[in-house]
Amino acid sequence: MRLSARVDYALRAVAELASATGGASTDRGRFVTAEQIARAQEIPPKFLESILLQLRRGGVVQAQRGPEGGYWLARPAGEISLAEVIRVIDGPLAHVRGQRPEQLGYHGAARALQDVWIALRASERQILELVTVADVADGALPERVTDLVADPRAWT
View 1: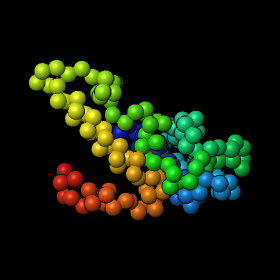
View 2: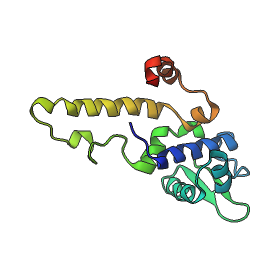
View 3: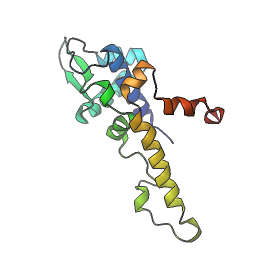
View 4: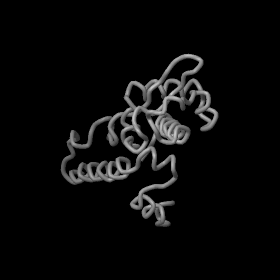
């Protein structure tokens, strides 16, 4: 699995928003500026601005302009999965040569590769839809994730 810098920064930004606002989406008194997020997560500010715009258009964050403005999550952090953020930024979770695995046409000895790519996507989806922004911000990942991380083979 390969995640772009854009996705990595987006996930870090929403985790920072969740942490700064206590995971709430309705506490409008707790705006977080792009500058605060950029500084806290060491994200290039101009790059972050374009990511936040994409997240706003995708319905993950909301924004208010002006000197008292900033960003906040559009919904509670516990309702926003990592998969949703990734899809907003990069599109579908698994592509092979820019195509969805079910659209590929493998033949002969390579025919089973299509099933492998579909299984890989399903496995990714299970984890990325299970883990929410709140889980990341709180550092309390679901047991399924911590079990996988506990396996030393996961680290190599």
